[in-house]
Image 1 (cartoon, rainbow, N blue to C red):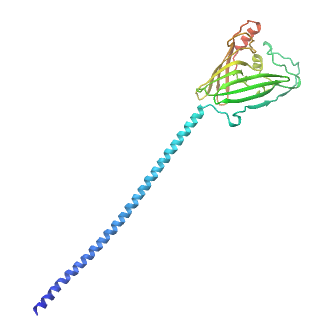
Image 2 (cartoon, rainbow, N blue to C red; image 1 turned 60 degrees about the vertical axis):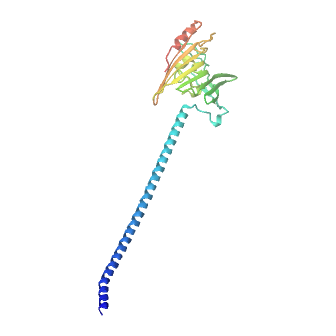
Image 3 (cartoon, one colour; image 1 turned 90 degrees about the horizontal axis):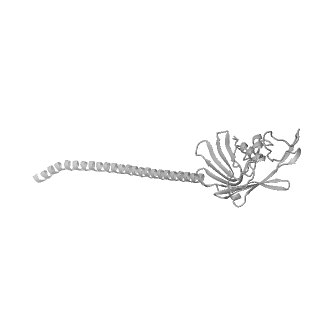
Length: 303
């Protein structure tokens, strides 16, 4: 009788302990589940942050690569521009083998009250053709020009008058010397003054400027060399010199092995004005009256 009683008492004592242990195990499982959930959440957030960091680093690398590429392209473009600025101009495809050809036809009508033979008092006659009353065919020009290669170009001006042909200009000019230097050689119109290099069809009026007419006739032409230097300044500033045989008016033909005439040039230009000053001179071999007058005439400054 005592043994069953003792067993019942032991069971009564053990049941609450078992119940408490079961409740503690449930709490632990809940805590473990909560920790596992927090761990999974943080791992997901960390992975998301790592992906965002990798994307940002990738974008930064792409932007840096693009910036370097753009900088390289800009440097290449600048180098090409500098090379193009210093490199002589090459002939275009249209005239790589054939020169540019132009034919300029001129006609004139003159209404003169006095006689056609006019002279300027105090100056020697220039030998320029006298004006003709009424209609007439003036000097026409055939012009051939082309770039020989990237370093030279040439031009030929032939004047057509009735049954005669005269070479008015035939010269070559350098293109690739650099440092603002250029050389022209052959027969060319002097760069003295503003109008001297212009041909009659480019004049503002039908007749020549009175100063040029008195000193040089239609224009001062040289058979020789011309050297020019363009100064590296913001304002256009150019200096030059010319050496020739001096065989045209206002000089006279003479037997000489060297250069018998020279011209010093200085040209400056602002926004809307251009001014060229020159001082030509002739070394006279025969002291005739005409030569003496020519020396006085060619010492005049033109602007």
